[in-house]
Image (tube, rainbow, N blue to C red; front, side, top):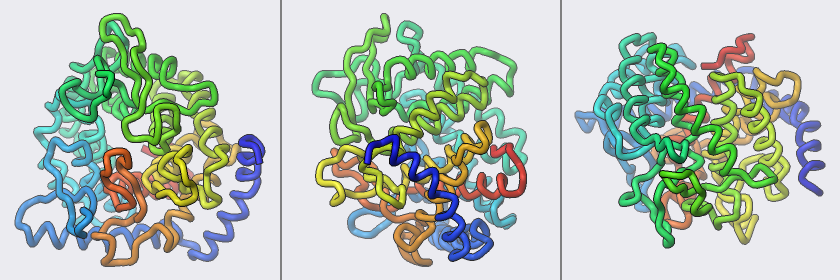
Length: 406
């Protein structure tokens, strides 16, 4: 079956499949999954209470123990962010109180300048605390994060540099100004900072980065490279590679999800039709890929050898579902919500949703960090849970009649 025909078949079947699955799950799909998630996360909270101080869970190590991360880890904002979503989904004020407490332990992260992930950290924690918790003073952290992220903008290349060349995963050919597709996710704090301050500088940096990435990161089929390395002075492309995918010319699943989510989010702030077009085409690529399984939970790389004997990546699916819910508000009636519903039905099934008290108290099983580095393979990861909960909250709002999902 060719890619276009496969995508059309998926769109025609999702509504019926979602309806049957929702019936099997019961009428309160969001409520049941939110209550389950709250039970699981109270297991995390019990462990934190026993520790006597905040320990920030990221994943489960090979020996079965939980890996707790410091403030400057790129994943440090996702656990507090998940608590913000859980508090909103369940109405449990204690979960929201914990979200605020643990958000504020990340105070120093707003000043990080040595990596681009300050956007992930502060966006998932402080920005959610402002939106969902009503903490007006959290705006300051978002503004400071935008200032920190802006120090990594390279005007000659028109991009925000992702990694320092003396840190992180390295290329054998050497990098000068590496930019990863993940960086699209960090632009949200820039857009918000311009709204908060009235200063267009942050907005302009975000738009320039999005435009440069659109020009250089994508192949004709709208799959994306993971890493593009630029000459920081001239903007010339030096290399196009991967760090976490199977090969330089393969399609790393989570990278495709970052692209879909990133350009959908950029359209929210700009109304630029190029961005919504890009999001739609990336979506077409994802769901038209022949290796995508019927349950719509991708393998870690769409071109990985040995499919179907390869790990799935629930984190890519969760991020994709959340993006699709937002995309459906801009392009209603095109099946994007139904497509997201089918992904969420799969993620909420016993194949991916952990039983209470198992899986290190994380929600979703079967995510992948980086197979090339032997890192976080077929494990729970906190950002998979975060985007799953975000998708649940967006689904809830849509079904309550709201089109403002953030």
